[in-house]
Length: 161
Image (cartoon, rainbow, N blue to C red):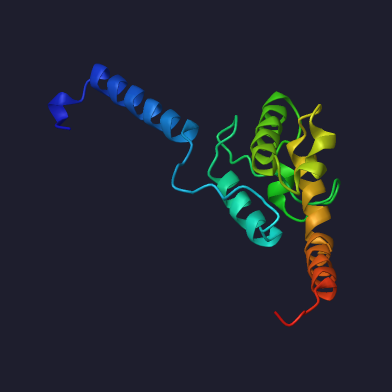
């Protein structure tokens, strides 16, 4: 901008432009991250969890912050980011519902759905995610798949054909 073009009107237009651009950036969902495949009986939880959380990091919530849920047990905080993040109020409640709706979409019809069902009425995304994580991260799900495979193998008999 040339010095003779520096007017109150030009400055006001530039401020409006920058505010709109800033608003668009804050409220835009970043589509750079591909959503994970739906969780199924053949999906490994640990891989799905990393892809899912990465996907949630790309979705901006009510305050322009990613909707990724806090994964620490209730009341446990280890860093300043948890202390400075609001975990209550209308914006948090809306983001929590968003997380639930996204998670439920990935769990429907699969082995993780049973763990999200108790949260359908409350739409508690953090609670549902923690429940699925606790159940599937303990290895019980993957261990039961291995045990079922061994039962099947033991029941198979070679008949010579």
